[in-house]
Length: 155
Image (tube, rainbow, N blue to C red; front, top):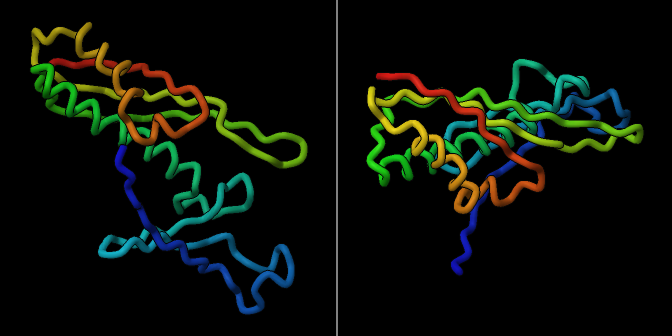
């Protein structure tokens, strides 16, 4: 087993001048500043008063899950001789918040739309989705179920 290090810098940008003196006196905004990469401006979930125009942790988690799945799908499809021409996913994650305010994801469904050449073995193309959870870093790291509802189009 080989270990891998990943790093990011998270910088709070929501100090309105007095820090966290009062609960409503600061913004829940921050930047993700990974070295040599574009800055990602973030906020908390709009349900908690965050800026709906900025990414929140929940957005980033479902996007990471979807992107990891996509990258493994493309790899395994290539290995299987399936020539994917386009791939677009609109994943959906369902969360809950209990009475005390603690939240968690209950489940996620990845819903990729995949374009392949006419005559592609769609059963094989679809079976690849169920192999990915064995290797996808993010899918292997989350503690909620992930399902797949892929659709296919001819190129």
